[in-house]
Image (cartoon, rainbow, N blue to C red; front, side, top):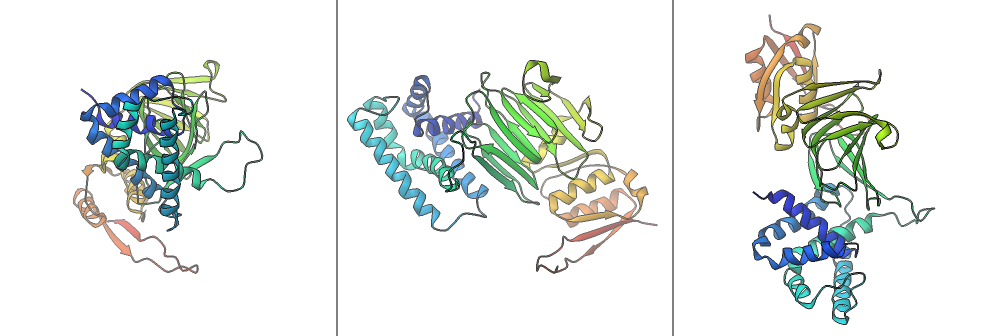
Length: 366
């Protein structure tokens, strides 16, 4: 059975390459076949909407009101240029037949334009100052503010979800021999399979190599451990540069790798993967978790500051699954399952005119 998510990721990836004139002849043929099949109409529309929504979500903070019009004008110029090249029979590296181009023009309004806007948008966000070296890598940064989540597609068609308070960096164009990204926080990856171009993740001191895999990485700056949970595929952990001599561990599905950063010690164990990856579906799952771990997750999930007043409270064990519950509802459920009570302190206005996090103090109920 086909996977619609994978299919529209592939469509987005291929068309971006076409617009940049970097696709191979087999890839150009694949694009033509996709558009010739009317059964792909919904996937094409979904892919275009996903790309545009990704732009808006990822760049909401720095999007200038005039950018949309500027980007639209520029993409129309490029589209007209592509049409003119096709009419003249000189479409750059790869010539697509008239029949194929007729198919493209039919769907330009719903697919070509949004995807091209995405491509040109990244170009317009590059600083105006030219790099000192022509081959200098230009990095794109996406942030998920505390209390929010984000998901987006990378240039190769890989899908990434970012959890609360995370930062993700990737090059606007991947290198010829590898796909290198960096992250702080928590991210789930669904990597597009490409055996000849390994996907490398730098998460603090943990270096990860995959070729087509689903996995979760946690690497928050204020935590002592970096964790990887593998859902499917295979993962290699390595030190230094990526090569066979520097591989330190091979992880298999269902395993959790924990790197103690201070001691540089790695441990691997079997776990229930869903407990660690369900956050991307909006699920908050606790299974025999100690209260301090529960509090840690709630703090990030709701952007609050929960304090356990007594060290004894940290030893309480908790099991529950939440989907749409509010923080007050969760606190009330905690009271039912454990002898605790809590008080909520309103936010305070700080000297810089910002506000502190809402503080919640949990104490033992006598």
